[in-house]
Amino acid sequence: MDITVLQKKISVFAQERDWESFHTVRNLIFALVGEVGELAESVQWLGEIDIEYLAQNPDTLKAISGEVADVFIYLVRLADIAKIDLEKVVEEKIVSNALRYTVEKSKGNAEKQ
Amino acid sequence: MDITVLQKKISVFAQERDWESFHTVRNLIFALVGEVGELAESVQWLGEIDIEYLAQNPDTLKAISGEVADVFIYLVRLADIAKIDLEKVVEEKIVSNALRYTVEKSKGNAEKQ
Amino acid sequence: MDITVLQKKISVFAQERDWESFHTVRNLIFALVGEVGELAESVQWLGEIDIEYLAQNPDTLKAISGEVADVFIYLVRLADIAKIDLEKVVEEKIVSNALRYTVEKSKGNAEKQ
Amino acid sequence: MDITVLQKKISVFAQERDWESFHTVRNLIFALVGEVGELAESVQWLGEIDIEYLAQNPDTLKAISGEVADVFIYLVRLADIAKIDLEKVVEEKIVSNALRYTVEKSKGNAEKQ
Image (cartoon, rainbow over all chains, first blue to last red; front, side, top):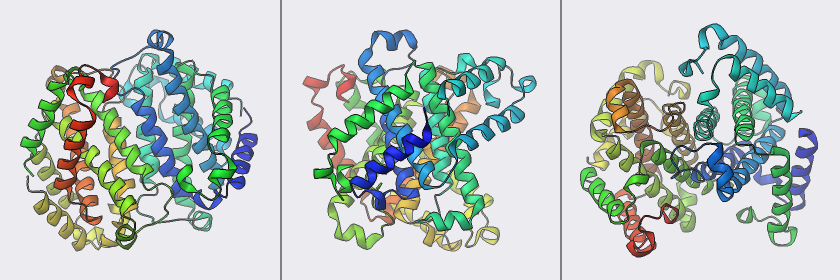
């Protein structure tokens, strides 16, 4: 996926609807929180589920997928608005995580995650 | 950014640390909620901020960027674990949003968003 | 408000609907996250608002109030299910906050909050 | 618990530290989201847990309790700042839930919740 192309699409979408003034940093973070809340709702009463469960419950998988897409779109839009180079910060985070959670100390240890 | 390559990297990272058993659908959604919470904390006492503010407050921008990266990584990992084709569901969502929020009815109207 | 009476009411409500098996610790935390997401949505496109704004926009105030109630109900239910003495932990937290954020070091300093 | 007394305590606490200007409606909602994120983190890698688990893992129970207290404090503060009568809106919500989720249609049905 070309994140820049996606950001351009979302930007045009917002521009066509005169929504640009709504897309401030804090407004977008609230919108992201709202979508993450809907993602949580999509699994809230299910107890632990595995990949088998999702294969047998396409409606649940579809609901989760739709919310994951919503979260992704607002996250990518937020990065665009805040002028965050998403690819760069993700790469940096992976490097810093590797240093912070060395294999030696983190192996099998969820708490170090 | 090649999402598949990123997912592979995160997968290897988890595998090397024996973290795979922790990465269930609901555990990952909780982890995502946790990171979104940290993103919220990074702007919680600031009141409304604009792009100028971020340019003048590099520490705030850096904090937001780090949390955006964390949210992104867990979101991409969740999609991988749940076998969600992220690119496909995002494309579908943009199409369905265009039909749901037509320019005609949504122009300048935040409530329709 | 007598929290114990409220918890009893919610418990009876759940019992009458055979919802008790759904009310596990993690399910209730997800439900809480969902309601907090709706609270976020109720203010997401508004930019900074003050008490004047709410007085002049009763629909927004009503939406916020409804979501605050939902969050409160799930929080109180979670405490009940997890056998947390809500009054006690809140009192303890206020004491520990007073020690952690002394007036001396925290005066006017949002970062210490 | 007398919510009004608690709100007064939190108000004095904020006043003594000159924190009142930080406690706007949207800032407090972000702070609430942050604490809910920490609550999610306290159970993120645990898979499904029951009351037995909490009895045997006092550290987890203590972590959850502390976060529940934090969420409660910000929620009660938000209600105070927004001039929401918490007791009244909670009572109203319980009544409206009883009408919305009748025993007849909701019995054993999580989706109606």
